[in-house]
Length: 231
Image (cartoon, rainbow, N blue to C red):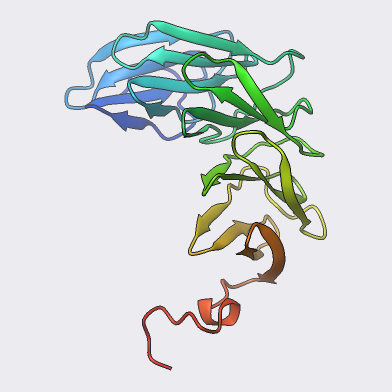
């Protein structure tokens, strides 16, 4: 079915047979995934330029009206709406919201760093430091939230926001819309200069990172890790 609404900016989210998609006409739409029939829509005060996040029957998204919305995924009814205390811009990068352990994580481009909300109530529980606006999706793993801005990557306690470590990328390399990935004890990030960064997560401390224009082999980072291959 052809979507009969105005400009769509990001990928849709799919959960429970419903497709959720935001639009530059300031609305979030919920459509039947099989038929394309509109189930509900919610208008906000600004364009929606990121993908929604759906968890436990709630759809979460940020809008260019500087607010974060939590709506009932089936009906569109409001659970809560959060407004940045400074009235500043909340990140509207693609997939900017992350959720883990009933906490919602997203960046502020005003200077509040990474915001941490209670996913049930919308109450701000903590924030994590950043020296520049955050316009990418954080990732949470093993009780740590990882995020990046224009020139650094950060690791903070996922519950308290306390900074554990940060690492400079040497220059303004990290693309504003690039989100880090954590796997196999390593943190991966890319840059707008064509570099691929890999950080070895060593007991919560950042001890080693590699920078190259091609992804490094696992063996070059962890000599004893051979992906099941014989030496």
